[in-house]
Length: 232
Image (cartoon, rainbow, N blue to C red):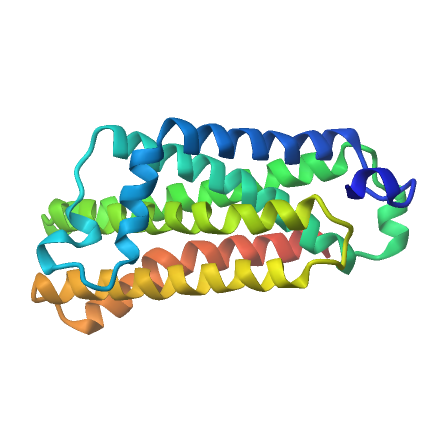
C-alpha cells in the first residue's frame, strides 16, 4: 500500500484519496457481481467472428443500457483518480508540499467532472447534428458504440489500474502498459465500428472524418487547452 510508506507530505498518501481508491475497488466488484451477464455480453464483442447483424451498434436497451450508464460513471471516476496518480510525479516538489491533504481527492473529482462535461458536449453536438440532418437513428447507434467501447475499456483497464493505485509510485510498469494497451485496442475497435456504421449507411469517409474532428476531438482538445491555461 502506498498510503503507509509514502512521504509525509505526499498528496497521494492521504485518507481521502485512499478512500477514493478503495471506493473504486468496491464499486467495480459490486458492478461485476450485479451485472455479470451484461459484462460477459460486452466482452463478447471482442470475438473476431461476429456477423454484420450482431455488431456493437445492434444491441438493445434494458439492463444492458443501465449497465453501460454505470460503467460510464465509474469510468469517469477512475480516470480522475488515475490522472492524479500519473500526473503527480510531473508536478514541482514545492507545489506538492503546499497542497492541502484533500487536494488529491478534489483534483480527481475535478478531472472527472471536466471529462463528464466533455462527454455531455459530445452528446449535444451529436444530437444537434442528428436533428439537423434528420438522422436520429445514426446518432443513437454512434452513441451506443461509444458507450459500449468505453465500458469495455473500463472493465479491462480497471483491474491493472487498481494494482497501480495500490502500489508505490514508479512500480508495476507492466500494469501501466497493460492499461495503455487496453485503451489503444478500445480506440481501434471504436474507429472500426464507427467507420463500419458510416459505410453501412452509405455515408462517405469524409463525413466520418468530420465527425471525428468536430464531435469527438474538438470538445476534448478545448478542455485540454483550458486546463493548460489554468495551470499557467
